[in-house]
Structure formats: C-alpha cells, structure tokens
Image (cartoon, rainbow, N blue to C red; front, side, top):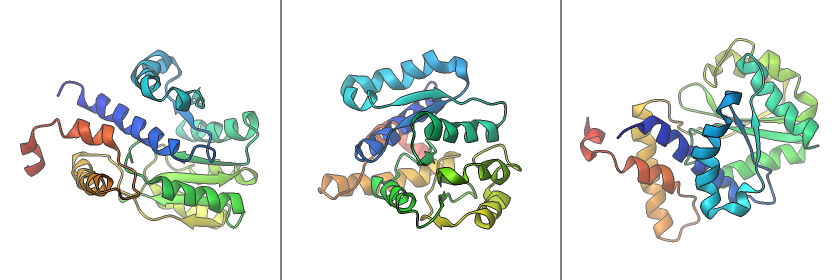
Length: 224
C-alpha cells in the first residue's frame, strides 16, 4: 500500500483524538506537531478529515507546534503551554501510537492528578518506553532532569528512576504501542478483540480508523 506508514500515523492519531472525544468536558485536547513548518500538511492529513464528521470536536482543539531544539525542550514547552496559556494545573501527554487506548484509562490518570493524591502518572509501554505521562504544574521543572538522558519517547530506564526519585508517581497498566511490525501484529489482535466486544454492545472504545486501514493489507503478511 503506497505511503502506508503515513496513512497509519494519521489513522492512529485520529483514533486517539476520538477516544478523547468520549471524555468531552473532562479534557481540552491539544495537538503538538513537529516541525513547525509542517502545519499545512498536518491540517490536510488530520484536521480536514476530522472536521468532516467531528466539527464540534475539532473546534475544541488547540493545535500548537512543538518549540525547542531538543526533545526535552519540546516536551517541557508543551507542558508549559498548558499551564501558562490555558491556566490549567494538570496535563497529560499521550503518544499517537496507541490508538487502542481506552478512555477509561485516561480518565483514571485525570482523576489521580485532579485529586492531588500523586504528583505524576506514567503509563509504561512494553518496549521500555511509555505511552502516557501526566504531571501537575508545581512539578514541571522536574521534566528537564527526568529526560536529560534521552531524546525520544523510548529509553524509559533512567528517566523512570529519576521520576520515581523526584515525584510521587502512579503507574498505570502497561499498553502495547506500535514501534514496529511485530507491535502492529500484536495490536491488530487486540483491536480484533475490541471489535468483537464493540459489536456485541460492550462498553469499549474501538479504533476503527486504524483497524480498517491495516485490514486492507494483504492477509498473508500477518502469517509471515
């Protein structure tokens, strides 16, 4: 399939945003894209398709560019945007490579930060990275030191140790994120289960955009 990686990234982000739609009233969605000059491409691939059937949801978005030369700078500045520009006191950053994340899991993270029972929330992924990080405002200065030894969402190791040493953190259940084809195969199976439960009326979120896209691939590739 031509340009499948780009199509997959778009589908995963759209499904993640639709999961947030279920939490309307609980969250203010912010999409932080990079690089800054990608704004027109981002609007064409994400905003325009979403607007066609989710105009009300799109109207609540804050779309910002990730500012900074390093991953740590961009990560920290995104948190600062929430705290300084939106006058909020808690923020969650969620990767776009877990389209099957359940709104109930995000709700748990929100409630933990809102209650001030713990300063941070972290959702580990199966590869040693993380799919979600939540933080309360007074602890934002810790972000730089937490990620001083990494320039990606992966390499959780030392960052995890620093987070635990500097903050009272709640650990969420592990979720498989999509970093490679083997991950995609695992998530495809998870989505098949979600699809079955969704059709039977179970209260689950089903990432239909991602599932429909990968099911267009040759069935034989899943057996390789």
